[in-house]
Image 1: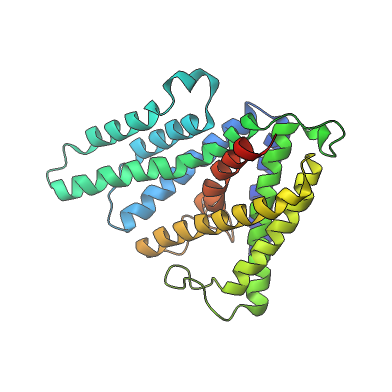
Image 2: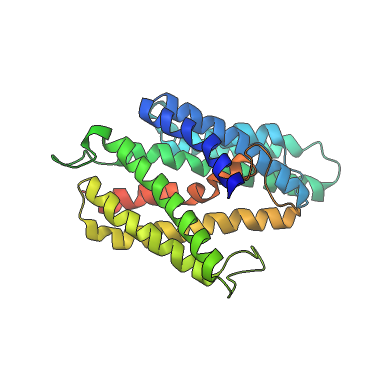
Length: 275
């Protein structure tokens, strides 16, 4: 727990400070996270037998993140950046004499770019949310900051609830072939914590609190899926952490794995449901 607390102390302040400052600082920090996480993903893919191209993967992940974030200047090219990443990755491996290795590198490079680029959904979330209703408790934060902070808190609450309840009660394991520490009780604890935070958070942004009964479980499930997806990649690579940048938490990819899935799903939820 001491290591986990130290890791959070290193990771959390820059995120909250840049969120308070707004754009372009928040977007710049997300870009840094994307670049580092993509490099870590390439390391994992290489350990799993997919010799991805690191430079193309990092640049490609930044391009995908910008595409997912729907940066205003790039909106006419929506979707085309992803296609460009696939083409660039193919060019990067054409000189590999072993076509099986080259094909694996092509697939691994494209995967790393698209997978990590999903973090751009956190920036996109701040763009698609409607204005906060008059009198909303979170009015001073502004709509974009309030919703981004809410999704971050939802993911952290799921992680905390799953860890605490899982440590106390978790005996029956959940998908242990991917992550041996996961348990059904941990899953239920995470979902409960996430739903409670969703109820309070939606009230704070001026939305019906009852929507938290939907948003909480949805974000909880996709956050768990994001964690499991990275665990699968780490297990395939035969390593415990994606890196050693953050004490107790491994690399950047270890800290944003749940947000990779949760952020774009939250943006879809807001676009489809919130008025």
